Length: 169
Image 1: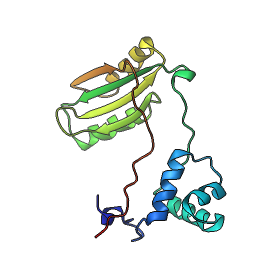
Image 2: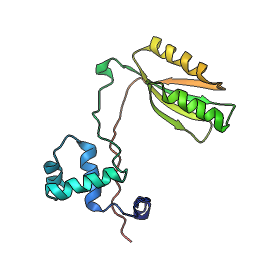
Image 3: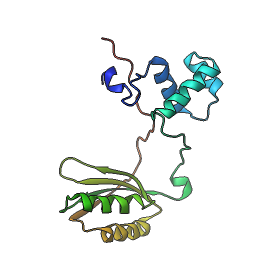
Image 4: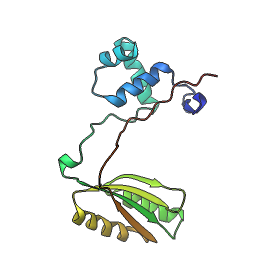
């Protein structure tokens, strides 16, 4: 990805090397103090805090959250749900998106290219709970096909994006 692609459209500002270091550090541990983040990226607290605030204001940092182990809170079943639709109208999509977005079991929801129209990542306590979810999903709007794939083991799961370095021209 080119550096030009990382230019912030609204502000015309580019992410520099320090911004990228801050993003990497925050993605690893957002609970660090501003002083600790500054130490890791080579800034004192005030300029570091100003950069973090600017990254938030520019929409680069969307929010800071706690990551929770789904198994330790009783959500042991992960399901990847492929959805195909016969209706590709804007009105249908708005109804479908609103219905799916309102379902707390849905962790991620994507419109896809290829043989599947939509992909959902769903977490629920067990198979019975998934059946309840499935019935709610198929009653929300007309669907052509729904395929469920059950995860047996989570091998890799990260939330940190690989922040690309500045491109050298």
